[in-house]
Length: 73
Image (cartoon, rainbow, N blue to C red; front, side, top):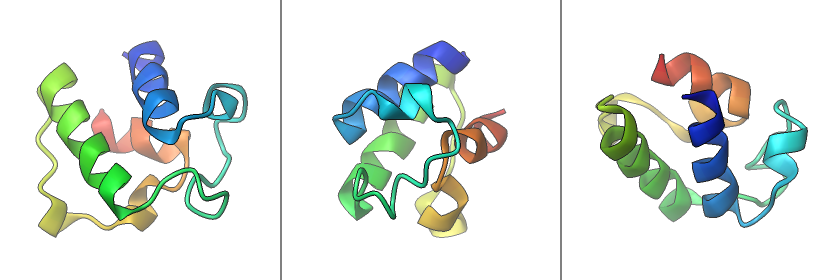
C-alpha cells in the first residue's frame, strides 16, 4: 500500500522527491495545491477503498507522506 501511495503522490506532485523524503512538506515546497489535494483524495479512494470526504479534512492533514499514510490506514 505504501509504495502505491508513494507512486500516486509522486505522480500528482510531479516530483519523485516525495519518495526520497517522506517528511517533506509538499504544500510548502509547492508540490501540491488544492486541486492536487482533491485529486489525491479521489486516487486514495479509487485505489484503496478508503473514503475521505474533503469536507471532513483539510490539506494540513496531508502535508507529508507520513501524514497521508496515517490518514489512509
